[in-house]
Image (cartoon, rainbow, N blue to C red):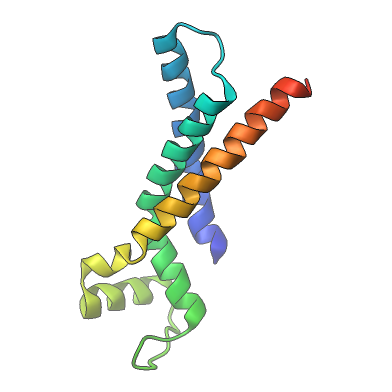
Length: 125
């Protein structure tokens, strides 16, 4: 079930990251960005991908919990879960927890991509 959310997330984050790094390097007229700049790109791109995939995260979480607040099980899969959320709670329910999700993924993207870029410059591969 986690793959349901992770593949679209990665398919958004990684191309955005590479495009942003190229754009920033071109704007700054440099060949490569410094690790703090790459970290900022990772943070922003992670946040955008997190926001865009929040509805998938909500569906995944509901399916993993197994039932709604009334105890009615989600036993027919993704489409049934999404339909019930939309019908019973409205479209805004698909974005429950978006601020926390964007915050922690942005922070993680900053740390991960900054550290990864710095380590690549220290340890040539």
